[in-house]
Length: 117
Image 1: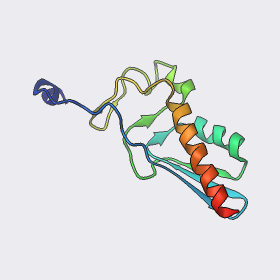
Image 2 (image 1 turned 90 degrees about the vertical axis):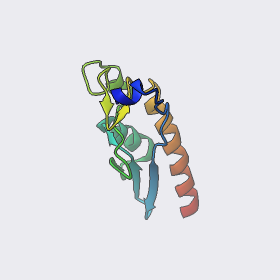
Image 3 (image 1 turned 180 degrees about the vertical axis):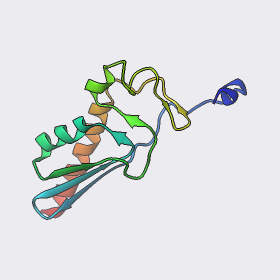
């Protein structure tokens, strides 16, 4: 990466993050999230969408570690200033990353629930 920077190459400032939602029957909702996510997402979505919610990380992509707001705030974790993974320089994800992901998940879940009714 240093050579690329020395050669003047620019790195993307954003990345298309893959998310999925499936409804299996009336009780089970599966949410697929790209990359390595933390347990906070599963806990949040179980509260929001019900106990039958399963959250699966590593779905379709492994771009990097995706922190929650709680983890993002801790400098000593992978989410801190040393997050430079998988060939993408990431000094730090945006502080609102969890809320942005949750907003997109909410739209997907609303969509699959409407289809199933």
